[in-house]
Length: 492
Image (cartoon, rainbow, N blue to C red; front, side, top):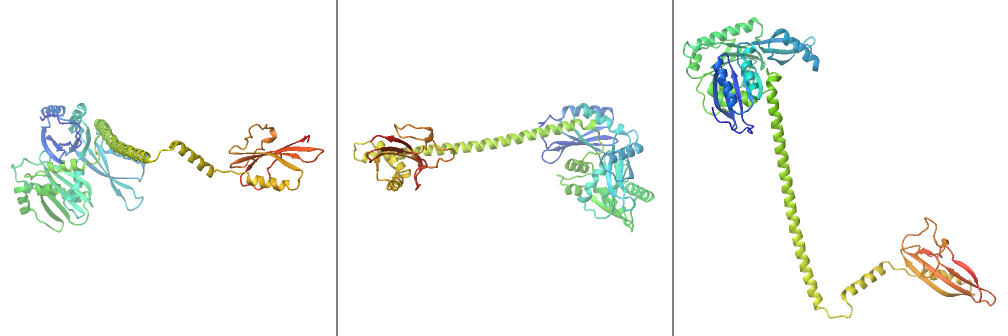
């Protein structure tokens, strides 16, 4: 037994090919091919060794491939239903035809073209579960993730494309070292039935006549059950070496049968298997096909798959953690680059500021001395600039007052006070303010506000009037102030 490798190796998986005589385990390495092979006899000693193998090996997923005589197929039609109704009908069919076994499978095969157009299905099952359960029971005890239990005949459908099958009636024939002669019939590239015939040990009898005799029996069976469609039957046989030469000499094509003899080594090359196979058996090909394709489960039950579900969840969490770590690393790297860039820009700005300050100090040193500090000059310039941008004069108000006083020559202006600012409620220093000085809400004009206070006296001998008017107005208005001031009698 080899030492246990790292469990975080998602390329590792293995196939256990269950045959009547033995179980063969094939290891798929991370490089994309089968690396190791282990064989366990189908007896108590073999089960004990298999248990030890499971304990000492890594917990990589195991795909169980079944090639047994006790595998049956039935063609049925069911109403075209969906969801729970369809499942209920199929469960009743499986329970009726395959009692006493949990290992059953339904393969959809299209719909009928006439009548109600019912669904056509192929029902298959392992009728003797005791041939499989001892091996699956050990897998569950050792917490090995079983990915599924698969039918070799159904898996072989994927070979049709690899060997360039074009004809509608196909019989695929292969030999497995621990099971026998597998014959699978396909019509329109859909499997219809498969049969496993026991074979004598290699070298004890001439294999070519034995194989051709079994094929003749199976052809007659297909005709009797009316599965064989019209037209010639194309038979594809996998063999190698002397057996291939014998089949070429003894097989005869006819109007109803055409033979296609394929070298196992050539089929292996088409599948991308490294190395050269020098055996007439196809075990290696089917194990490679299963581990490479990894189809959906056929026969395994929930109890068999529970540790595989946990394995999938664990793998998903590890992948998610790796993705989060990668994103965090990328984000941290971007932040680091941005921080270094900002630091460099800050250093450059500080260097430029020092340069400008040095140039300013040098230019300042070349200027003649003045009685006023340059900072005070700057303040004065800023004030002058502000006044030029926000200037306000009483010229318009004085013109309005002048026009108004033209009709009253007896009034003489005693004093004039002017206040400009941004506060429309401001008052001239020393002037009292009453409620009447506050403009009504909504009547305060925008912009710079001005207050204009006029005091006058009468020139008549008998009586006099001193009047002060004030009020805010917007610069640019051409009318009189909006409200008059206070009027009180004076003694003059």
